[in-house]
Length: 365
Image (cartoon, rainbow, N blue to C red; front, side, top):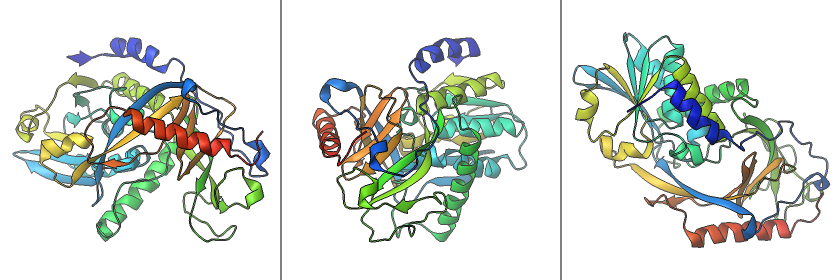
C-alpha cells in the first residue's frame, strides 16, 4: 500500500482539526497573579493516551553497519527525548550514511526520527521512500508531550564520552533547527516553564546552555505549593501538527510511503535501496535484537483546551503542558511495560495529583 499526496491531504485535514497553536509570546516572571489556574476535573478529560518510549540506559544508537552489500544506519533508542533530539540525531545519522552514497534511500519508520531523517535525506538531494507499519497519529511520537528538553534518555555511569559528544552535537543542531521552525505551520512555540527542583541554589545561579534565562524564583514570584521552582523559557512542539507537516513535506518533495512491517534484517536486506535507515524506535528491539532497549510507558490525560493557560509545569505532581487541542497532564515513566493502553488507576492518579497542585495555588489570576 502506498500513500500519495492526495490521500495524505484528506487524512491530515481531520488530524489537524482543533489543533491551533497557542500563543508564542513568553510570559514575564513578575508575579504569580499572571498565572491562571488549570481547571482539573474528571469531567474535563476529553481523551487518555499512552505511548511506549524506546529507552536505552546506554543512550540512543547512531551507528552504521554493513548488511551484505548494502548499508544500514541505526537511529533509535531516544527514550523520552525523541522529539527534542530528532533533528540532531537524524543529522548525525544522515551524515554517517550519505557520505559516498548514490541512488534512492530507504527509511524504516514514520515516527519523528523517520520523518526528520527522510527530510534531511531529501534536503541532501536523494530520493527517499519511507517503509512503516504505522502512520501518524498511530506512532509514539504523535502522542508525545513535545517539550524541547532532553529527559529520560540515558542513565548516569552507563554512557561513554563518545556518546556524550554525540548527544551534545545532536542537541545543538536540534535546538537550532526547532528555533527556525517556530510558528503556526509546524506547531512550535516558545513557552514559560516552571519546574520544581530540589537544588539548594540561589537566584540567578541556575544555568543551562539552552535555557540562559533560567533562574530560581522567590516564593512570592510563583503560586505553586512546592519549596523551590525554577523558571525558564523553552520550545514546545504540538506533535500532531508537526508530524502532519513533516509527512506532507516528504510527500511534496517527491517521497513515497509504503506500508510494510519488517520481521528481520533479511527483509531489510531485500529492499531495492542500497542504503536504509533504521528509525523503528521500540521496534528495533525485535528487528535488530537490541537487548538494552526497553519500553517505558508514558500515560497522558488530556483536558479540554484552556487557551488562557500559557505556561507549563513539571514536578512531583507530574507535568502539565498546554496545547491548542487540550491541556496535557502526564507523569508516568514505567519501565518494561509493553501495553500501550491507558490504565484507569494511573490516569486517576495523574488527575488527582494535578487537582491537588492547582487547588493549592497560593494566588490565581
